[in-house]
Amino acid sequence: MVKPRNPIMVDEAINKVMRHKWEAETELVSLENCDLRRLAAPFIATHNIPFFHKSPYDGFAIRAEDTKYSTDEDPVVFEVIDYIGAGQLPRNELGEGQATRIMTGAKIPQGANCVVMLEDCYTYQKDGIHYMELAKKMEENQNIIKEGSELAKGTLLVDRGAIINPGIKALLATFGYHQVEVIKKPLIGVIATGTELLEPDEDLESGKIYNSNAYMILSQIKRAGGDPSYYGKLDDDVTSSYSRIKRVLQEVDILITTGGVSVGDFDLMPELYNMLGATTLFNKVAMRPGSVTTVAVKGKKLLFGLSGNPSACYVGFELFVRPMIRGIMHQKNVCMKRVKAKLDDDFPKMNPYTRYVRGQLSYQGRELYVQLAGIDHSNVVSSLAYTTCLIEIPGGKEKYEKGDELEVLLLEDMEGQANFR
Ligand SMILES: Nc1nc2c(c(=O)[nH]1)N[C@H]1C(S)=C(S)[C@@H](COP(=O)(O)OP(=O)(O)OC[C@H]3O[C@@H](n4cnc5c(N)ncnc54)[C@H](O)[C@@H]3O)O[C@H]1N2
Ligand code: MOO
Ligand SMILES: [Mg+2]
Image (cartoon, rainbow, N blue to C red; front, side, top):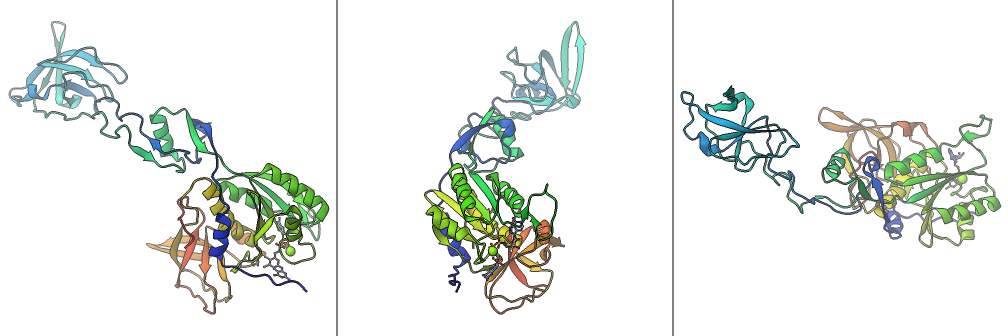
């Protein structure tokens, strides 16, 4: 007789996993290669932005007080004493009745306190001297971008753990970082188990299938922020599987296997965990698909035994491995973000367990709707191509219908949320 397993709730399973979280080390990467990495330390402004008072326009820097009596009929005339473009430094301090021709981004000369746009000025030359005539009044500080007006030195710009996006990258460059300290990605090994598996470059044979799970998981690891490494597939053979898994476990931070976690004759993972001396945290979760998801721990290393059924494997990863990867990488929001959406299809199937149905989100007007991404079976792979969220369908007797509001977990959102619920 097969010993019945004791299912635990999804939240409890996540908590059990998260108790084994550790904090990743940090490393330096070049600015060019820091995209989508996580900042290892709070990012603080090391100087004022702008670093000097500068001109927002092409024009003339002058003293506002010199325009006090300027009118259309009686424009004020300035002697142009200097000419500077962005990147050049003013050579002369400005005195009464003097102007510096200045371009956008250039440093405001000493003595000047406003900038007039070229369009407002009439310029001419007489006896080799340049003049500028202005028929309007100006105010002090008009058209000057003040030092520190955008950011003051010492401002916290972005918190530790933030994912580097193009804007953060621009800010890193703004503060002169050519190397960036980022959180090291945990190294996650992937092994597929099953004598029936073929690699994509092998010829298809009857009774065999292509190994899709391993490639799917490698991609899920990347999406969650980890560093995946594929260690190939294993036949359902205890001796060779044990030696491979034991060796791989020495090389990686986390090991994910797919298949062999149920109660079948060739489901070897429970036995292999025993042989490895790993402690099983749970081997049954009250959910569908992925009820057979098994997690074990050996020392600091976690072993995720995901189901062989593709949809179950996918869901098991997102519910249990994603938060662990994010937690290790100092993220506060380790879980998937939950939002409410209206069902766009009937869902008549009832199950005592909570279901995580693969769904696809879309807006209809201002309302968020979710459609089933395809056939809702654990052994199905095709629906995963269209999946952008997991629809949480509470266990029990209720049938759900088109228009019912349910909670969905977002798979492609980077922000996440702190807790599962
Ligand atoms: N008597 C019982 N049988 C089953 C139970 C149960 O409770 N009692 N649970 C079922 C559930 S639920 C699931 S889910 C599966 C889990 O199976 P395993 O995790 O043991 O996985 P395998 O037996 O190795 O394979 C299952 C299925 O998936 C295919 N597979 C495996 N690896 C891959 C891969 N890398 N790529 C694509 N497809 C893969 C495999 O060929 C099988 O068809 O057990 C139920 N049975
Ligand atoms: O682990 Mo199974 O997926 O519940 O169908
Ligand atoms: Mg099996």
